[in-house]
Image (cartoon, rainbow, N blue to C red; front, side, top):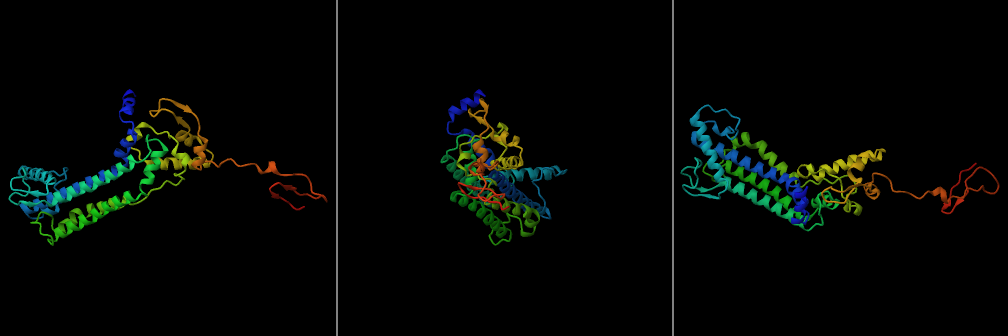
Length: 337
């Protein structure tokens, strides 16, 4: 706990928000980048195997480490090609002798796999940059605060986020079109990319997955409660520290939604666990039992208190007898005899 306290002073601008945003909220971008790199490596290795040994080698995924290859010479060649491809991923142009592996021996020139990989890295880096700028401009100082929850839920509605998410989708579509044009040899590539038939057999599922993952960035997942209520911005919610590295704010929003539903049914225990402790210390060292009724009302978990109308009623009998209610200060309330 002492180390966390020291970090508080070293990084006073909400270090927990930065850690959570980097490790959890942006993990979809990591997955997108890893998928692009994996797909690019797969088609490059298979295309090189097709070029070197021919046959049906282009339809096989040689990057699958689970494959059992008993031929030592073939296995050594595969490992050598993989090593060369890994180097080519970081180059836009390959000169003679640039690569230490067996990839593109005697075939210098433009690195198609490098262009695909490095452009994906640039797009993902731009996504990170926009997200960090947005976080820096927010007032979030604690990953458990309503201010930080509000920031991540509102981020998807900002023009900057929509722009960079659209850029990611545009990259996914354009890169897949580029790969298809190369496979059809409309873009000359010296057979460095698989032919169309093998590309469909080997990479169609990956291509659909990449485009789907990119399109998911544009989908908005607003929590079903009134998350823009000013009272929630001032609330510090109770979240376990383990969640700093794995629980997204969307997941926490679903947890809150379930607790709100339970509260509407009369069970406030789960909701009090989430909002019923007023945390004074940013590291949870000073928890005091203090149910925050204003926050519970803001979440619409319970109805706000209403003035009792019966206190304003005049219950005296009307003239002429009969069974009826009298008038009130706010209007007529009558029940005929």
